[in-house]
Image (cartoon, rainbow, N blue to C red; front, side, top):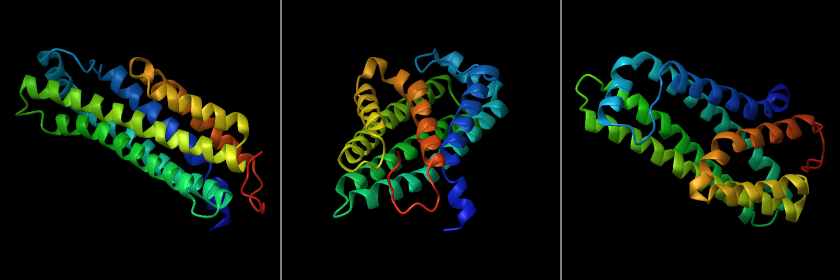
Length: 214
């Protein structure tokens, strides 16, 4: 691995959060994204009146998810060697992260599809687009729970990440499974978790022989 790329790799997590925040700010701010249960007329207005803004917001959010996907490679190299052997838990963590990233890519893709097809879009179809968007985001939370739980358990067993982060990851995983409040964990807490992990990995010695982070 190129030494510069290796040094900058932890910043992918922070870049993901920055682009996610920018994308949501565009969609929720200038585009006035309605709630998933908005009326058909309000849903259609979102896609037809704010077409360009919706596409910009979805692009920014999608780019953020690509950074997260890239960051998962670093997580894998952190967990796998530390676990050793069959690497069952670290593999589950990586798989959960990949599924989460896929759902987070499909979430803005639904909005983009609605904006692209806005000319012949019916009010009811527009409302369905909003519902599907929320469904993919919900699925991202479920897969994120698998990712965080496996990461936390691997870290407790191997010390790949500090024990406090391992327990925080497990708590966050459980939180994501509590449907009424899962959105709070996904929207606010998970990005914070990602920034913390990025900083921990940034502070580790690049040429360290151990894969653990203290």
